[in-house]
Amino acid sequence: MSAQEPALAIDPNEQRRAAFEASLAQHGIALSPHESGSVFKLAAWMGDGIAGLAETFPAQEEDLSAILDLSFLEQGRRLRDGRLTSVALTQACLDRIAARDGAYRSFYRVTAERALAHAARADAELAAGQDRGPLHGIPVGLKDLIDVAGLPTTADAPGRAEAVSEADAAVVTRLIEAGAVLIGKLATYEWGTVGPDTSGLFPPARNPWSLDHITGGSSSGSAAAVASGLLRTTLGTDTGGSLRGPAFYCGVVGLKPTFGTVPNAGVLPMATSMDHVGPISATVAEAAVTLDVIAGSKAARLIGEPVRGLRIGYARNFFASDSQTMPAVLTAMDAALSTLSELGAVVEEIELPDYYAIEVAAAAILHRESFDYHAAALRDHPDAYGRRAFLSLAAGVAVSDSDLAEARRAGQLFRDSVDRLLERHDAIITVGALTTALLAAPFEKEAVWTPMRTIGFNVSGHPVLALPVGFHQGLPIGMQIIGRHHDEARIVQIGDAFERATDHAVQRPPSLT
Image (cartoon, rainbow, N blue to C red):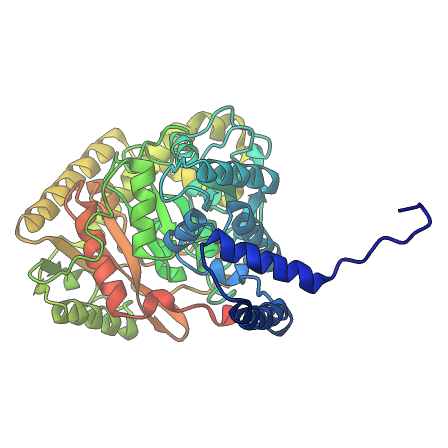
């Protein structure tokens, strides 16, 4: 053929027919010429039709925004079967934070570049068959009392804007070893004290159920981030109720573990004998699994198990006769215990010691230990504190050594009394707070007492699960399930059963529905 001669066109039908004949031969199928022609016509018809399916039924990209609302356990399944990547999940999370958090202010710092790098590493590891566990590739946020190397741990204090951490906190090391994607630092009340307060470094976080009401503190950003759908699980701290209060007020789950179960190394202290680190999560199961990662525990081992036959002590005396208790709170609590009874649990009304006595004892311990930690800085660098936090910390100067000893004696007696009740019961249930979230406006003028029933269990060190049990005028109501020391699995079992039997955990703030 000369250079001027055109190339002979190849008949596509002949190509398809040749490929068809080759396929028959490869599979050892012998057909007569007539049969081959007939079958080829059918094959060609199917081939032409399939080629047009993409136009008729275009491929639909999975809605990553909807995936953010799945439990991280389901997200993990999709990461492992190839339907999802951690990079895509993390980017969707970052996009949602950018779109929503201007209203809720749950984040102090979003570490997008670091998060995407962690996500890419998680994808590579999972693709290579290296599975670090249930948080592998899952975005997680941290209260800004917890050290992350290279980032400031501000505690929302004016004097800590540049307090860059040199090393990761122990819990952060455990999260990284578990393959979690660290996505940023979350809001706190200053030094874990009083709030919400506008005199810190950042404006206070806001409650997604009502921007006019408090989140509760001090793990305010952790709860707001979960309630607003930005994250499925976060870490916070709890010295007097700082995990559980935000959980009650924002309608999410808080799990305060047994004292000492989770290491506090690298976490700014408030009162060392009462400080706990734990998760705030969207569901009981997610909180339990998160705790297992940071504690090396087995809190999730009884999830899904029935509660029939379990003995529950209902400490109704802790709140029912208090004049501040909202009638709706009492109704919701009674209904919650009725639900557990219907599930087969044996509910018996019990009496815990007088709440006000343990509250004053715990407050004295907290304020004295906080003052001892901050005394030199309060004297030498008062401008490093917002004024409200300064006053709260300075109050500890009034607690004498003898006062502290008496408070600790009372705390031990409270612990002993709870232990005795737990010898006869698998768990104790009581209210979380006497009211729904308070309006935020009065807090702008001065510190306001919030009527929670939490601080005694910081002194006693018992594990406590906080979860929603209802709503009143659009605001969540919460309860506490208290367990024996190191028996997180039992309270998780009860909370999970209650959660499955009700619809409280699937409710979303009106702005998100």
